Amino acid sequence: MVSEIRITPSILNADFSQLNSEILKISEVADLLHLDVMDNVFVPNFTFDFQAASEIIAQSALPVDAHLMVANVDQIAIDYANLGCASVTVHAEATKNIKQTLRGIRSAGSRASLGIKPGTDIDLYEEFVDEIDMFLIMTVEPGFGGQKFMQDMMTKVRRTREIIGDRPIWLQVDGGISMSTIEYALDAGADTFVVGSAVFNDPDPAAMVEKIRKHAHDHSHK
Ligand code: DX5
Ligand code: ZN
Image 1: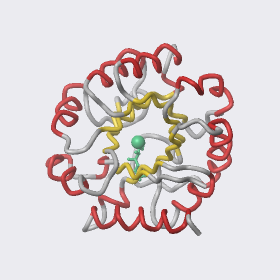
Image 2: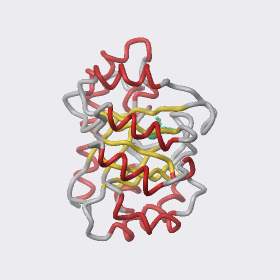
Image 3: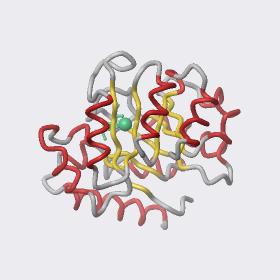
Image 4: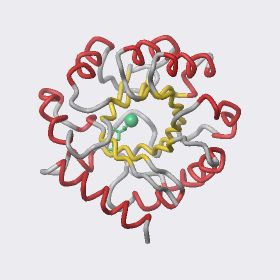
């Protein structure tokens, strides 16, 4: 049973030409802003370079949860932490020195988060658990919003919850989360939810965040 639920909307499906006003729409109701950084190398899509991301982070009305889907992430992860991100996620598949990078993120003042792609085994990373403030389990292949939730990832979410035990580590799921899929992730032990298209394709993004949060809260207290 999770005690606290966090909703971290992704702006990947928001209108990039007016991001500030898109972010403002959810700033009263979201916990963090999930910023998907893609380099067209680690994933077949590009979103922001460091300069553009820095401007978004500096202007964001919400604390930023940076999800770095970039190759050779070790150094740039520290640069993102130094920008003042609340949380920085590096993908296990993109790091050369996981422990050093996670420690570097923490010492720059951000929460250190480890992301895991659908094809990657979580057990390989259990040994780093004490360096980690959040696990991000991908529930789609990273790269694009609007994909179908991979329900078969729930075994991995459950296993991650076991690895976490009673440590105060957040467990985030990312990809295809909506009113109809969040229950599966909650039941498996997730407590932090990226929601992209379900929020920004809705005519009222803030109302949708609140609706999803209430639904998650009601479901977890059943
Ligand atoms: C995908 C991104 C996700 C994506 C989620 O690679 O990491 O954060 O924006 O969008 P939805 O909720 O539409 O799957
Ligand atoms: Zn993401």
